[in-house]
Length: 273
Image 1: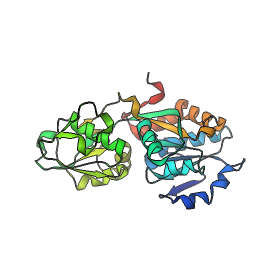
Image 2 (image 1 turned 120 degrees about the vertical axis):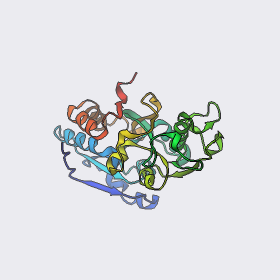
Image 3 (image 1 turned 30 degrees about the horizontal axis):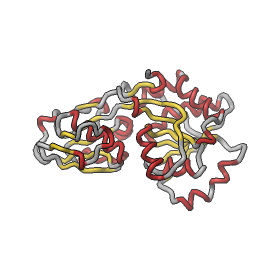
Image 4 (image 1 turned 45 degrees about the vertical axis):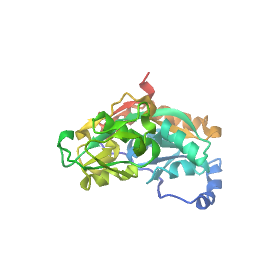
């Protein structure tokens, strides 16, 4: 199955605030398309939703970012209308650290995250001092540490949850050398480390390993990790956005794209009770 191309597709790097302000007024034009920010891993099903929305006369531009900072910065400055790439814990941390006035609008998918290795087939094979890569942001790094604890490789302070940091490790019997990297770069580290936290979305894009080959997944029973559509408070009830979300959640064409893009490594968050 091939996905329709967007009429306008932007690839953005991290932007300075001053540069953002230069075009924010353009996004306020009444005849401007709905602009939704995302990252490469989430783009293919969104592209299908864009095409489906166009059939109803709703023009949507997908703005693709290469990092996990710019989507919230750009949204907070009004240069896009919504974004889709983060779960609630990540959003809460972004609001705390950046002072952003952003709110979740509706749930998207819940993705599995795993521990991957190109060198070893089991955790027992990991040597003492093995190099292990996890995400460097406060929330997803904690998710990686929880995975290492679930694998029996480390112990964490009781009850710390996804807020765990390296300082919360209470036992590390294999003396793992835990390296923190930007989450979107973890897949590139698989050749250089013994074990890495991995996002099947990015692994599938990179063709580095089989996305299903993780030594351990964190499971699809963590509703706090459901990816959210996020907007500014004044934009959360935009009827165009609400209709686009409805298309994303209920279009058979989008569901087929999700299945192709994510395999069995996701569940629809809007269907979880």
